[in-house]
Length: 593
Image (tube, rainbow, N blue to C red; front, side):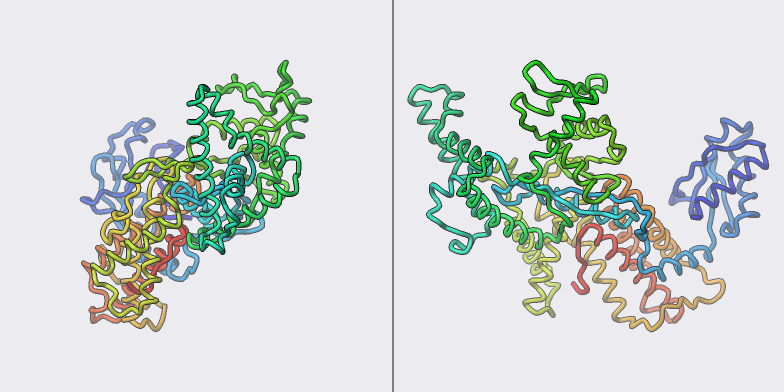
């Protein structure tokens, strides 16, 4: 039982004993900096049930707590606020528990744990990953790690959009203008090579449209009659009919892309337990629609198309099967969700998809619920805002996208330039420096993106993200490295605290322990809210508290051995927690910097 829960229980006892009133809940808040105390009870809400003044009530409850809670040593009342002071012993015992727990903050996964699948990335195989994919990957991976740390069994997955007209556009362009070039012959990553042909298709397609308009066609006519588009549509029909040549080309070019993606994922530090492919799932869901028709969940219109009416739920009518019997994206998503539950026996799913699909997921979850799937109540759309650069919005087919690999390389270069300017890495070998630049650059990128609430749009500034001061990844990495330096110099021999009886904690030591105590609840809160931002900003607060401690308290220079030992161990616990929290964000921390 946490100390707050224990105090809450005793407060309810006190009020019941003193005023014969049963409180439903008790309100706490952190004690304001200008008053003595570690936790504050707000008495104002109780006055609705108790006829007394807030100061008398606060004093009466305070006296009861002193007698009945050994961890409380004194209190003070300011108007309707009861400020409670906890004992040194409580904080020291709490710290000893923290320091001895290698998995502090994390909940062990058991056979009874809920099983959650997290979907993220889910790219198209006609272009490389870009800045938008980076936010998606970082969010999805981090949420999966946070859910795991909160005690859930987690599977990471992606559905790769490997079929459709956009894929055929790249294939057709390569067939027409590729001259047989490959990733090996060009030295290009496969996803970049295929992406170049997607851009090439668009350029040539626009030329054809302009020519047709010059010949007297309307723009709408030109858009659909352009020979390139007609040829791409014919290629798609051949693919769906199983044409061997088209399938062979599709498999070859898709493999180039997968190999390219794998390199980017590896650099970014994200992984997956299972890949689903749209070429395998695009027919799923049709049988579910047929069953839903029989149950009356769906209805058929005069043209033969199948719909669901969600107007009573505040939405609209949604098509689930076209009049020619072909599926729409919604059909596939229904079928894929059901398939995943069969494959992994999961209790819920998290879909990491941009906020332009908010409506789609409302409809999907509602349809699955109406079809009678109880797990539909445990589906969550991790909706996120777009990422912009100072230069503006990105467009794939025009080739103006910020390539993920290029951005990662740029971040490494930015970290290198700033590190060299600061002159912090004199003793490092060239190889060590390059490894560190990459760690700092990636840490800066990941932290800058993850510290923001997922729902908010981001304007990403690479230079700002690599600042060694303020709420940035490099600032936190630097603090971690400073702690490791303290530990190396201290050469700590034993883990026992061995503090003398009646040891009085310095205020900065106590504040640091308080901040450490928040870590387990922060993980649970971040899991409940699917928000890595809560972990990121907790870590920044912890680092700020440590730096204040470092500046105000002598660690290695104190002559008292027990005090030095304690402060070094406190520093170690902070370092371990930074490393743990940054691990949940997918960020590495350097031993030296």
